[in-house]
Amino acid sequence: MDRLDFRSDTVSWPTPAMRQAMAAAPVGDDVYGEDPTVNELEALAAAKTGKEAGLFVASGTMGNLVAVLTHATRGDEAIIGQDAHIFCYEAGGMAALGSVMPRPLPTDRMGRMNLDQIEETIAPDDAHYGRTRLILLENSYGSRAGYPLPPDYFASVQAIAARHNLRAHMDGARLFNAAVAQNSDATAITQHVDSVTFCLSKGLCAPVGSVLCGSAEFIHQARRTRKVVGGGMRQAGILAAAGIVALHEMIERLADDHQHARQLAEGLAQIPGIHVELDMVKTNMVFFALDEVVPLTADQYMAELRQRANIWLGDIGPRHFRAVTHYWIGAAEIELFLETTRAILRSKQ
Image 1 (cartoon, helix red, strand yellow):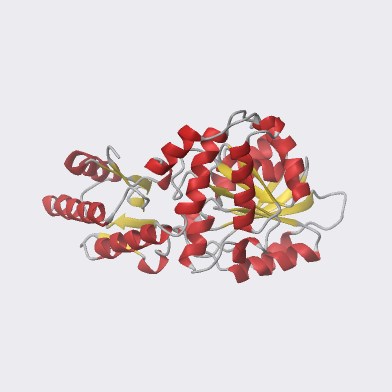
Image 2 (cartoon, one colour; image 1 turned 90 degrees about the vertical axis):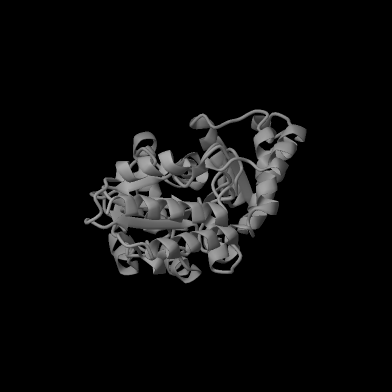
């Protein structure tokens, strides 16, 4: 890459193998169902998540929106974590485009909604209330340092959904990070939800795209919803080819990203003036903060990182930051980040 970019794993460039696959991909018109590379990707994604079918979409936001609009309709309610990505960072699409009302609940330190609160929030069958149709989940949980939530939590939510005839959808943007971090197969998690979206363009390193997976009937309906929101693509096999490489070659190596995140977190924790919750670093995200005694604003610290070493970082608050590791960040890059941070803080003493 042309910079050391820790802002997100979305900045990752496609690998050389992906570029070769994209150049050689056989293509057709996907809206007609005739793109063989897209069809191959969708079948592979379905197998990886233990579902009957998959649907290639342009982004995770589109995949989640298509899922919500397929599961629910105008006036329905969806229970969701108050700091979930779908609720906070997807432009209010479920309400703006579907008139589906979110019912946000607080989450714990890891990103779990309280099970009793979920059940208590389900609306009774009464004309005064919107109908609760859907429970929206997330794994790994981005707002909680990318924490990988265990399968038993989702099994408990699934039991609640079954008792009340609800559906459960998972925003699994970093699903495979969560699975690798727990030394499990993704299906151990996804078996407990009706549908799941995962991103190809984050840690899996593909340039574009996500896949929505679920039952054959659900995906049949979701294909129509994708068309409604403008997601019907034509010779999309050029993009899907990179996704196929990602699913074959990039899942297991996510453990390297997790190791590098741990290396970064442990190094930062040893620098005076920096706070890191080490027990929260389980996947490829490191949340850390500057102590109040450090005479730097977030903007000043990030500017010095860029000026000294061409390191790019994102802030999540006045003195709080998120660093994300990915394919293009290795042990040497982590050490450069740490040494540059040490030098910056020493210069301000």
